[in-house]
Length: 266
Image (cartoon, rainbow, N blue to C red; front, top):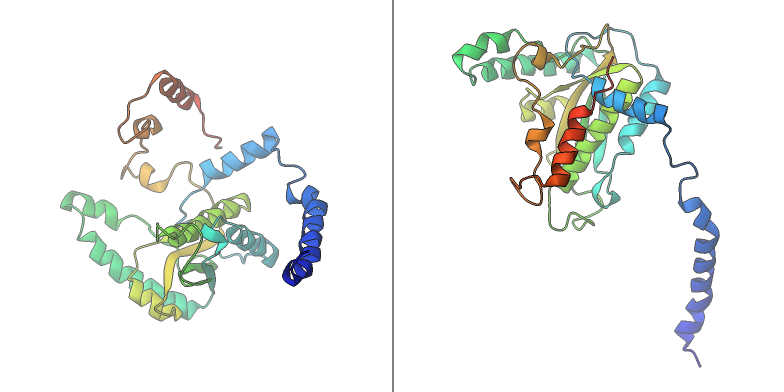
């Protein structure tokens, strides 16, 4: 004879099992395969994404477009499904002017950190669009969300920060697909940014972004065009079965396939 506890919970277990079985067909995507055109569109967004600094137009971003971009960011992968991000939309000219003033101070400091031969080049680079873009956005990370123990963060504590960066990338690619430019401004004093936006001590500012429609997208990243750095060959960054592990025949075959890939950019 079953105990009262078993008798009480048996119907609940049966109901849960029945619901699970009935819902099984909806647990999977009904059309998971990408067509060749859809695949190419994703790769084109990746290959034509640019860090936009000086090409912004003042046109406002329609709410429907911004809603899609923010929703894409909110659907980024996150450790333990904790969704640690928040989004601070900054339209105020006064607030942006304050952040821009801090950028100028940080930019002057950064210039002195480079070798004398590179300082003139650095000084002439356009590295932000804080005032030109119609919208600034700060993406943050709440490391305390859902408590101290999070699935997947138990041993690598920075996984929540990495998750918030995934939200940045999702937003960036979705924005490119919406013909919006995005520029990441990282030459800022963190405390000044916190004070300008009222960010509490327990919240981590991850990315300060400038967003808007642009006159043109550069064919190549601006720092590459300016001769600051070149894109490194992917085949030089591959390791097999360990750090600096040499390629076997399969690895060499992959390297050759990589050399045949042509970025989808136009």
